[in-house]
Length: 463
Image 1 (cartoon, rainbow, N blue to C red):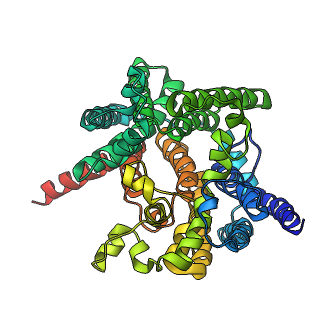
Image 2: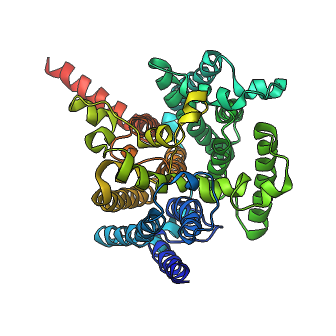
Image 3: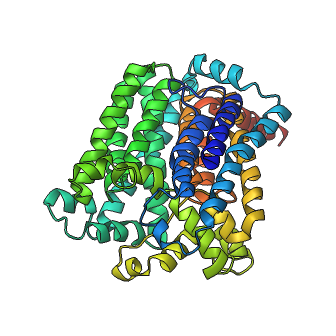
């Protein structure tokens, strides 16, 4: 009863704090902070954490845990996360003079600024070139995948789908990884969002054709390896773009329809991909889709605590991003892979073991213990709040909206993936640089071009 009382009090207090720092926790006004709260923390972490702390999870991963005391220790750390994270954001917001509710509502009502007339031609050329590169990257990814899981499923070859999915996700190396991850997986959906916003604003045939091409490519790259979450996140990106451009007005009727449609799609994917047909598997809280949402994401956190307290030594510098670790001539090691190898070695031997991703606290603990957990909470909370404030204050153009939507979806996903990506994330940096370049072409190219011409003319006169 004490554990549940602590959990309930924490949820109430955390909800209040997250509302203060986000401006809105309403489902009809989704934003970066509210998605972090609902998806990364409450649903994917804290509800499952309660079940594990109470000892009523009956989940296969937790049964591999050797020391039961980490049920309570893990729950305490999650409780700390739920309070310290928004408190840090509140402090950051106060320092920067941020009024969350006022600025978020103003952003929603602000009209979209499309490209300046003088820049339209050069912007379309640059955007078309990037789109072509992204579509080719998607095609390259499919061609370089020996057995595309999606095609094998459509052919009816379902006997080794689990192994094929691992091979598809881990079978790339060298330059192929960058082509797939940057231009295929990351850039294609974001460019489709830019095209979507322009299409809704201009109705021009160019944007309709480009959006359709990028949309199909985004669907393919999101589903080719039969991962279930990417397609849902991509559709949510489109939904957010519709909300931020005022082309879509959410209400509870529409949200209910989306939830029903999403649930139906998820069930179809579970039946087709994993062969789950028993009704009880879909209704049970510790198996099927519900168990995947409530327990599969948070259970590895408790395994991290157990593993790196007793079985494995702390990663320390080896847990840093590869770029930083390389400076010290150390090879980066991801804790999620090490926990999989330690807890489920039989899956590694069969070739079906990937990684046990979990809330970022797991990787922080694996590297620097309890101190690492506290530092990671404060640091990541501050970074996310600063990003949120920046995006709400930037000009509301299609390119900026697309980048905002990208981070709104990818930050919550990264929070349940690891802590290293928040210290140095090359894909985030590249995406920011590429979209930043498009933003300059979209709004300020004519100014820069005029300035450069004046400099050349002035230099010619002086000579």
